[in-house]
Amino acid sequence: MHSNGIDYDDERDVIFLSVNVYSEIWVIDHSTTMLESTSHSGGNYNKGGDLLYRFGNPLAYGNTIGQVLFDHNHFPNLIENGVLGKGNMLVYMNGISTERSIVYELDIPQNFNLLPNIDNEPSVVWSFTDENLYNRIISGAVRLKNGNTLICEGDYGYWEVTPEKEVVWKYNGFGNEFWRGYNYDLDSPELSHYNLTD
Image 1: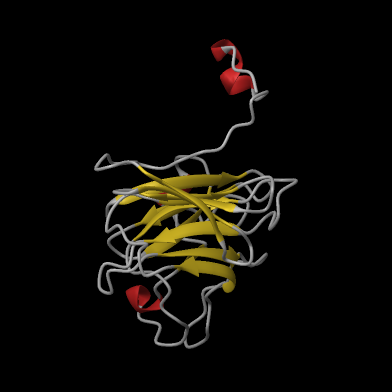
Image 2: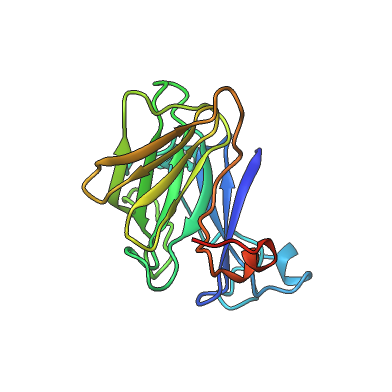
């Protein structure tokens, strides 16, 4: 499966799990007990350990309706409060077969339905790709407070892209690998012991 990323939605009490080999994100009920998770009932959604929802590659579960979005994926992360796109999800799609990566912003449905022979996929709100954006492994993207998106291209470095898809800046790491990147303000508590100034 090569699960390579996870995020938690505390409002819905669910876990989003990136499953790279299946080119999907799986949604799991976090509220189940250990015993319930071995069954098909229990938890807030009364599905026990069954998947509540899955998306990115409907062919992985035999559904021929719905667009295949992912060709290997990394770092599903929900956009936080106070940031453009709050509640949507960013996913880095590696694009191994085309050798071109895409960052997707997806509108995750409020109700998790997996029905046969219908399009169960989330809506694409925004996406970004470029002929020079490609890494077959690792990588990710986060939304910045200014509304731009910080993209970590694992074997290159970083891109900052506006909602209009303009590249603001790029950083070349010259052969280093970057698992993923995060953004912190100078006054973020995570940086307090570094005594950073403007």
